[in-house]
Image (cartoon, rainbow, N blue to C red; front, side):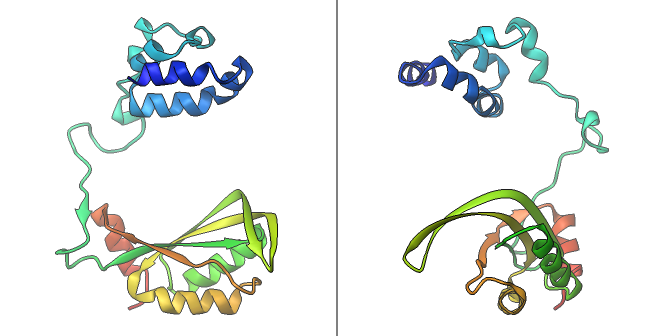
Amino acid sequence: MASSLFFRASNLVSSATIRRRIPLLGAFCVLGLGFPSLCSILPFSSYLKTSCPQSSHFVHIERSKFSTQSADKTVQAVKMEGNSNIVPSIVVYVTVPNREAGRKLAGSIVKEKLAACVNIVPGLESVYLWEGKINSDPEEMLIIKTRQSLLEALTEHVKANHEYDVPEVIALPITGGSPQYLEWLKNSTRD
């Protein structure tokens, strides 16, 4: 099914377009289907520098190369409810115009213990409607991990310290995850 859909779609685009899309398509296929499946459905497998029978070693990656945990240990995930060591938590997205503004805002958020961690993701382009005009501007994204109970205080802090008239503050619930990380999040933020 997947291969027939791909072949029909590949007839609609040029080979140059396909070559530009190989990294994205390849990542999807490797993660979703495994490398051997990728080789069997791609009409342009000649672009790949390996043959399918020899590529099966890509499927099995030793955990020790990426982790200090032994291969016998499994990663424990926890749901938010029913665990007294963690609190309801959220991820909050806030866009900023540049790196300097992002670092300043992120630092003040963590200093005030409004969040345990703020990631600054560069290289965004935002297309938006503002005052009746479509705009396109480079931005950076702050990904803020915090307690759900701190959303109102965090929102007020962002509004008071952000250069935009209407800063983006969007919260998504964390429904589960690493118990150690979620406990650290709880202990690194104010009550």
